[in-house]
Image (cartoon, rainbow, N blue to C red; front, top):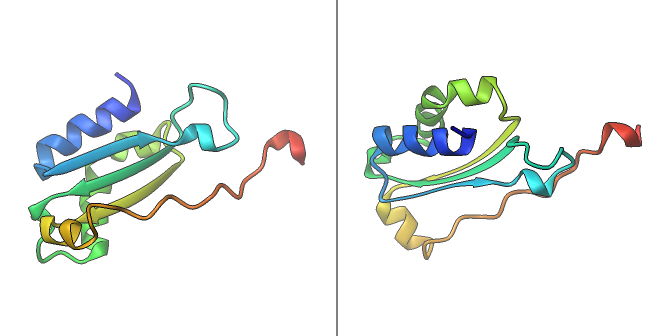
Length: 106
Protein backbone atom coordinates (compact mmCIF):
# COMPACT_ATOMS: atom_id res chain seq x y z
CA UNK A 1 0.00 0.00 0.00
CA UNK A 2 1.31 3.45 -0.83
CA UNK A 3 2.06 5.93 1.95
CA UNK A 4 -0.74 8.19 0.73
CA UNK A 5 -3.30 5.36 0.80
CA UNK A 6 -2.04 4.23 4.21
CA UNK A 7 -2.42 7.73 5.67
CA UNK A 8 -5.91 8.06 4.23
CA UNK A 9 -7.00 4.68 5.63
CA UNK A 10 -5.62 5.40 9.10
CA UNK A 11 -7.12 8.88 9.36
CA UNK A 12 -10.55 7.75 8.15
CA UNK A 13 -10.67 5.22 11.00
CA UNK A 14 -9.50 7.57 13.74
CA UNK A 15 -10.85 11.05 13.06
CA UNK A 16 -14.10 10.08 11.31
CA UNK A 17 -13.72 12.91 8.82
CA UNK A 18 -16.53 14.87 7.27
CA UNK A 19 -14.04 15.64 4.52
CA UNK A 20 -10.51 14.32 3.99
CA UNK A 21 -7.95 15.01 1.31
CA UNK A 22 -4.54 13.35 1.34
CA UNK A 23 -2.67 14.80 -1.61
CA UNK A 24 0.76 13.82 -2.89
CA UNK A 25 2.49 17.11 -3.67
CA UNK A 26 5.88 15.53 -4.31
CA UNK A 27 5.73 16.51 -7.98
CA UNK A 28 6.05 20.15 -6.85
CA UNK A 29 9.47 19.43 -5.36
CA UNK A 30 12.86 18.29 -6.52
CA UNK A 31 12.39 14.56 -5.91
CA UNK A 32 12.49 11.47 -8.08
CA UNK A 33 9.26 10.76 -9.98
CA UNK A 34 6.90 8.47 -8.07
CA UNK A 35 8.40 9.26 -4.68
CA UNK A 36 5.82 10.06 -2.01
CA UNK A 37 7.74 12.60 0.03
CA UNK A 38 5.54 15.70 0.35
CA UNK A 39 1.94 15.36 1.52
CA UNK A 40 -0.87 17.84 2.03
CA UNK A 41 -3.64 16.78 4.39
CA UNK A 42 -6.94 18.64 4.64
CA UNK A 43 -8.98 17.07 7.42
CA UNK A 44 -12.39 18.22 8.59
CA UNK A 45 -13.67 16.47 11.69
CA UNK A 46 -15.80 17.36 14.66
CA UNK A 47 -13.29 15.39 16.73
CA UNK A 48 -11.27 18.63 16.54
CA UNK A 49 -13.88 20.59 18.50
CA UNK A 50 -12.21 22.01 21.61
CA UNK A 51 -8.71 21.09 20.42
CA UNK A 52 -6.20 23.79 19.58
CA UNK A 53 -4.11 23.54 16.44
CA UNK A 54 -1.19 21.84 18.20
CA UNK A 55 -3.44 19.12 19.67
CA UNK A 56 -5.08 18.53 16.29
CA UNK A 57 -1.71 18.11 14.62
CA UNK A 58 -0.44 15.85 17.42
CA UNK A 59 -3.48 13.64 16.92
CA UNK A 60 -2.69 13.25 13.23
CA UNK A 61 1.06 12.79 13.77
CA UNK A 62 0.40 10.02 16.29
CA UNK A 63 -1.60 8.08 13.71
CA UNK A 64 0.81 8.43 10.80
CA UNK A 65 4.12 8.08 12.62
CA UNK A 66 5.12 5.10 10.48
CA UNK A 67 4.79 7.13 7.28
CA UNK A 68 6.57 10.14 8.80
CA UNK A 69 9.44 7.87 9.84
CA UNK A 70 9.56 6.39 6.35
CA UNK A 71 8.92 7.95 2.99
CA UNK A 72 7.24 11.20 4.04
CA UNK A 73 9.62 14.15 4.22
CA UNK A 74 7.17 17.04 4.63
CA UNK A 75 3.54 17.44 5.63
CA UNK A 76 1.22 20.39 5.24
CA UNK A 77 -1.68 20.00 7.70
CA UNK A 78 -4.98 21.85 7.46
CA UNK A 79 -7.34 20.77 10.24
CA UNK A 80 -10.80 22.20 10.78
CA UNK A 81 -14.07 21.47 12.51
CA UNK A 82 -17.13 21.37 10.27
CA UNK A 83 -18.14 24.92 11.29
CA UNK A 84 -14.61 26.27 10.70
CA UNK A 85 -14.59 24.62 7.27
CA UNK A 86 -17.92 26.23 6.35
CA UNK A 87 -16.70 29.63 7.60
CA UNK A 88 -13.66 29.24 5.30
CA UNK A 89 -15.95 28.54 2.32
CA UNK A 90 -14.62 24.98 2.29
CA UNK A 91 -11.13 26.08 1.29
CA UNK A 92 -7.70 25.58 2.82
CA UNK A 93 -4.66 27.75 2.16
CA UNK A 94 -2.32 26.40 -0.51
CA UNK A 95 0.91 24.74 0.48
CA UNK A 96 3.98 27.01 0.42
CA UNK A 97 6.25 26.96 -2.59
CA UNK A 98 9.24 24.67 -2.50
CA UNK A 99 12.38 26.51 -1.43
CA UNK A 100 14.66 23.50 -1.64
CA UNK A 101 16.98 22.59 -4.44
CA UNK A 102 18.44 19.53 -5.95
CA UNK A 103 21.63 18.06 -4.59
CA UNK A 104 22.92 18.41 -8.15
CA UNK A 105 22.63 22.22 -7.80
CA UNK A 106 25.05 22.35 -4.87
